[in-house]
Length: 167
Image 1 (cartoon, rainbow, N blue to C red):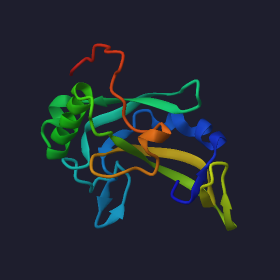
Image 2: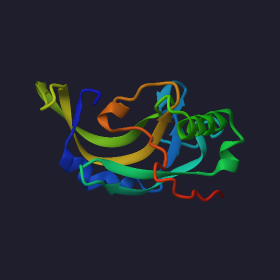
Image 3: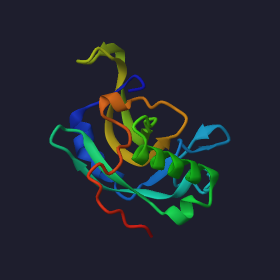
């Protein structure tokens, strides 16, 4: 992903740091630079919409799953929050719904390689990520993530029709 190899070992050691991190709409930026979702200068009505991640767990197939808790009342107060709620409704009601991509913001120690290598699926990388610390998980309403739903990433809506509690 982005020319960096995130090993299974590194992800397994760190995925629990996703719990209680903010859910943002897009990756937060200030003055054209990417910043932490906790940066006091970010636009809380644009990036932060009253949502957070919880219940991070590893599934039987090795992928990481987590729940997104969305405060609907807070989300309704911003344009990006309303757009997200509209897209969720589309996923719940349409068989032709557009997928929702996600993308994590993560701090890493990057081991730069002398020359690029190729991983087992044929993707070239020039660094290996170590000591991951997750900052946020962004929902990409208008972008395609580095990993895509066909690779098992993105948002799937409560397919078991479990009652969702609104707060």
